Length: 378
Ligand SMILES: [Zn+2]
Image 1: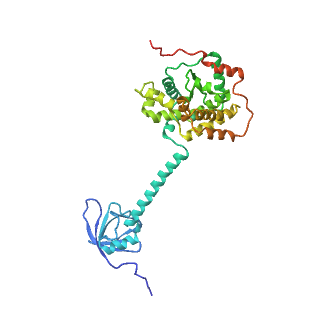
Image 2 (image 1 turned 135 degrees about the vertical axis):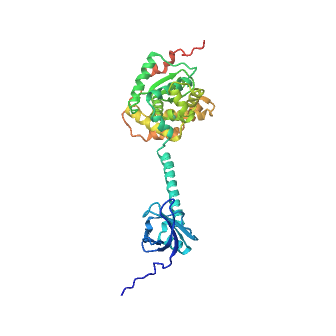
Image 3 (image 1 turned 180 degrees about the vertical axis):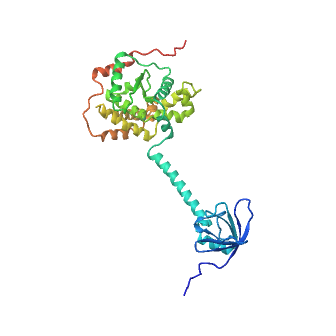
């Protein structure tokens, strides 16, 4: 005795119209919901067709109150089937839930969640890895371009100040620069000293560093100068100056400078910007971490790094912040306490002074001889 349950096979037949393809005549028929798909019989004695539920697509998602549906199927690409009747539509959306409007809303919600997750991920990654597009661009520039950008920046910011070139002092500077560069992952830094009373030191693009007489005068020993130089080298290694210029004047103007143009007024801006530039806390921290590595590789004590920044900050506080020159430099090099702490927690190593007494004397008098200004105003 066969007792097949027909409860899930609605006997109800719905009116349908089948279109075999675009531009072809439609054929009337009746459709039912079978176990595995939509079954339909067509007029003119055509064979019965079955479109499987999984392969169905609805022209519009089936709403709860739908009175008809327009279907297509992977089983018969190009063809379409229009079926009339609210019960048919309601039952179909149960058997093929992916056709329902709820399913589409769900898909949209999932898509939005996914997009949001990707967006949040990018933001988080940027924050965690300090990823910056400008830095990424800077890192892909050839060294010779960065040098040209550095020359332009250095010349524009030191305009009116003479470069210190006393031979004995220069020799010491070259030796010290070479000793520090050893730990600077492949970049040999070029240090330029200027007869400028403003206390300042900054990295410019292309592995160059500008140091002022004002800063040398303020330092109490060669280890302090070495610490400051190592810190600026850290900015250079991370290409903070390159990235700052690209962010500041835009990639177009930066490229024009690099390719030998002047990019209108942006050249002057570049100099001003770098001289006044303050980096973010994380950039300062990055520079400090490099500084510690550089000093260790050069067997120079990191104490000078902490001491100099701390002392200058303290002097500044005692002066009540009246000296605008010192204030400007401190503002662009914050975190003396954090820096000193970072130095304190380093495990000790054998160090020798950055310069011996004789070399230090020669270094301190490097501005005894200065190079005549290139652009002597006639
Ligand atoms: Zn810094």
